Image 1 (cartoon, one colour):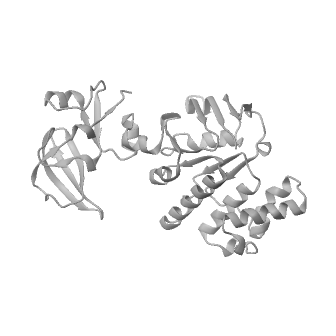
Image 2 (cartoon, one colour; image 1 turned 90 degrees about the vertical axis):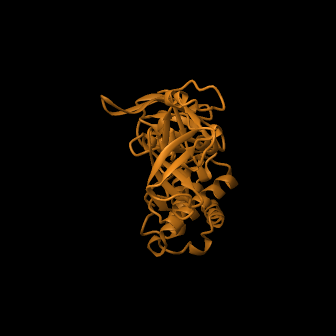
Image 3 (cartoon, rainbow, N blue to C red; image 1 turned 90 degrees about the horizontal axis):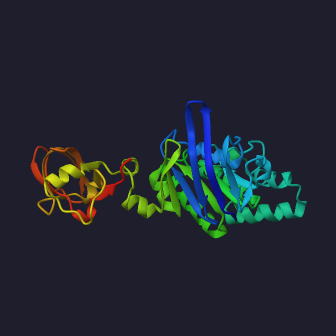
Length: 333
């Protein structure tokens, strides 16, 4: 296991375009930290810098206090799992898993024991003599994970490992990754653009935007208390209200508001009168399985309102209530 300290990490592919901009981050020993963000935010570049696949231009990376900035990738003892399974098609599953162990020049008995142990832990023992082409996508990704774990890495790096799987397999594999990480207590960095996937397994989340970390927090705190408009929009806060407008309507707040912008989740807006009211007209209604979603036109713009019960109809005039405890203040950026 290891803790990772990243300090002032910067990376540019073009002189006038920074992919990472003086990024600093501490990852705790045994923690599963997810790096979340949209395409182009720098999350994969950061993972590749940590792994050593690309050289550092500026900044330092320390693992358990040791500066590894100039240590070549093959000496970092990191396990890596990528979007593509990257299995050797001409080797059996057992041979794929022992490949990294052989490169470390361990004796035959040790290699066999380590491989059999990791096959057992990952539930692949009955598949060890098969070829990759004989496995499903989920099984191949499990082999890729087993190969990374077989070398007993100090850090496990996962670069969108589930993106090529269908929805059901994604859920199964994320649960498998979480189970193994908890069992082995291995420091793990998981890169993804999928919010649900990330929140389901992470101890903490680093949500990135334009080469910087916009918010570093637990999944629960990011979901319930986004700090900025970017974070709020990324995780599904679609409704934004100016503090100046709210004050002009004498709305109530549960605390003093110093920022300029407020937000509220669609499911927290109530249909009916309450402490903070706003009139609107339903311009569309959609049944989405677990809830109904109303698109409501108001004087402050179009808002989304989610309710578990069917409470209105298209073209109806309705009153919306914004409970003060559900209004979240966003930082000015």
